[in-house]
Length: 331
Image (cartoon, rainbow, N blue to C red; front, side, top):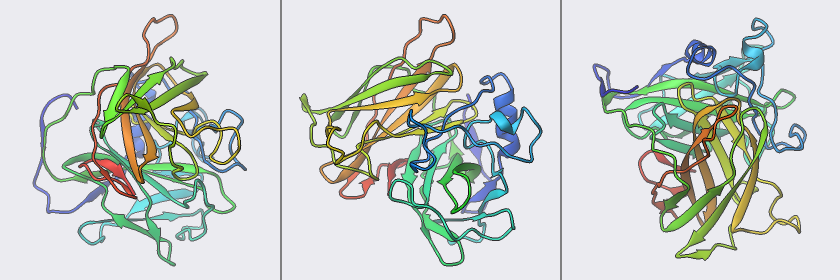
């Protein structure tokens, strides 16, 4: 979306728009070449040695289509379907995951301290939140709506049903109202968040494991006492511009393992599926608040001299739970 657009004529509330076909069309078209991505499940039973796992294929899809789709592009995969509930009360985001038998799934494995990770991003990548819904006994997940402001948002449900595959399902959701699209920030080499500076080192390569190191400082001094958040010193989500292909990785080592320092550097091994522009979101916890540093990274093509970079970003934390700036936060 490159021009100002108005979304109007809707009643107040949320309207779910299933975007599986859109995602397939984008990944097969000129926005970005189709390629396999990686997705970290956070479950040691599924993780590979590099800290990332293959994208998940739809067993019923035609060969060469879903078999190589990155995570988050499908609303339904391997018999599991993400269904937002239109009857949700105002102010709540409510959804279910139905299984191969058509019934709501009620049993999930814990991955990174939670059974469900819900990540939402506006399609122009100007808004982002990572929250954790609560499940009712009937399999209904509910959370205060993380969708801040008008626009088309992509909601990613990241979970592992007990006895099933680790999955990331995605669906588009519209928030009605006037909207002016925002351009993707230019690449740079640092981001500032609530007085913290995060610097990025490393050049990602398409189709190969790339080492990215993010270093946190405050007032010019390195932060060496990062606090664990969801069982790690940092979480990194990458979304590809255009189709919002999803990549979620976690850092090398773990708090309390006797070898991983609590900062200032947090190192990740990530595999980007193809050349192009990506938006990276680093979650880290310090002073009992979770913050997000945001980066635009350009993944160069073969033979390109382009390097990764990060724009400046700002956010306001909420003690103990994350930060509450519109469109950027945690729960």
